[in-house]
View 1 (cartoon, one colour):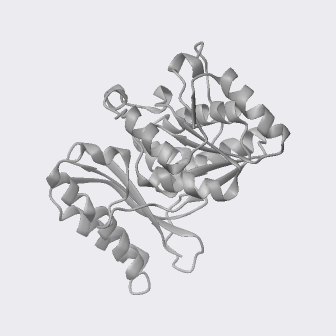
View 2 (cartoon, rainbow, N blue to C red; view 1 turned 45 degrees about the vertical axis):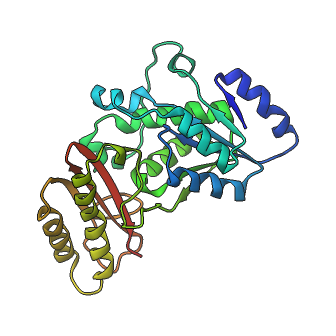
View 3 (tube, rainbow, N blue to C red; view 1 turned 30 degrees about the vertical axis):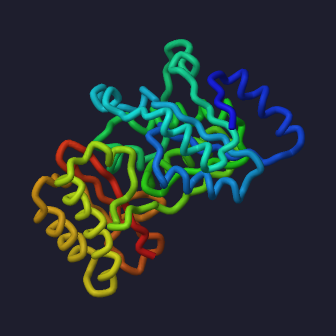
Length: 279
């Protein structure tokens, strides 16, 4: 496994692979890797000849500077995990490599940009799509792999791909959970023992909605999920919604196809998101 720090070096290494018509996969990450990231590498290996994983904590997607400051950066641990997973190349650029000069970025990501996470973290998805486009330009992958936990992010990246007419394939991969149901996240490291226990209520509420989907109306399911979460101390709910997977607009028709339940809450001082497909 090679670790590369510049776009020029990365392109030089990948060019012969492209000429040999090898399929290249990209797994973009911000580091602080866990088994969820490793699962993306493993799935990518099934689709492609070469897997590139990027580690870059992107400043333009953080709406709170404190959040950027405290984002975990255990690089040695990350490199070890990627090596064990059999990743081929790690692209680990500095900020000045990705942003050599000040730049303006704003593209039309559709109405879903302003819903849910977009409402709580204004401008977040502009920053996400800005860096993902830069990574796509650097790697020129055939496929890119993202975790379903960031469901809205995948929608926004698909919008960006359509906006620029890019030909690569975006693949969404299943959420990887701890044995007790907590969705794996780099942010879980910030949870105290009590927070960690309280955080389980997010998966509990999602699972309740999925298990009882045929028993109640959507309005009733939403109320029951909200009650479950609000009854847990130390958890402050931002939203719980049942939405259309394409638009993220609330859906109250149980006969509708492509439904997803999404939740976000602050557990102690740490904000967590999770979701579950309902069909």
